[in-house]
Length: 242
Image 1 (cartoon, rainbow, N blue to C red):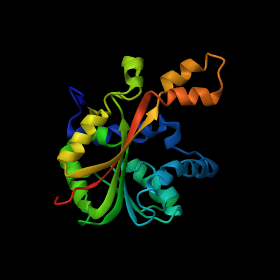
Image 2 (cartoon, rainbow, N blue to C red):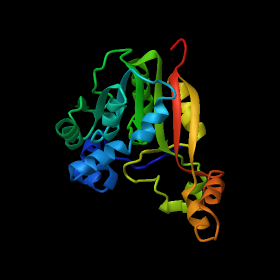
Image 3 (cartoon, rainbow, N blue to C red):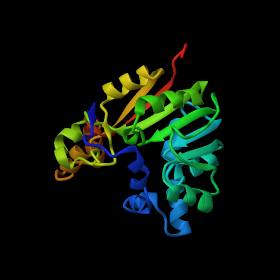
């Protein structure tokens, strides 16, 4: 596991996530209604992933940004709620999508114990100031049979090694922690979870190199899938007795 040093002070964290932060990510903003609909529809693959573990129920998305995933999950039948540190993003989700989103941090939120069947954290854990405290709090918000889905960059990936300092997963100063599958699994276990599943994405570095060769797309994808890419997804549940 890696740690950013020095890192932003807790009081400065919310200031990092204003409108300019989201505007730098084209898929996190939408200028027109058609773009907004496309952004929401584009979250379908995430909904399909969580439906393998919970097909319905109450869902909290931590770090929900402007709420595109929440809107798609609501369309799929989940009862959704969001938590987001950015005041600008919370306003977007409420005004443009009519979402039940709350502005604040995990430490400042006051959800009742055992409130949610599913809690998702799409690229959030690497941003947390105190991940042990926050993940322990989140565990208490889950129902005993609920699931936590965490996605974050894989600092031990093939791509991280190949891209080096240019790797997209570093994202200084926004990413405070840099996990490998092993270190993230240890963290979740220490916080009272049982890891159910870990998935890694395939290598973009390898796929780009193979594009230079006269090989079929299916061959590029198969070869690239043998090497780990930027992201990993972990599914966990509260451990019995915690």
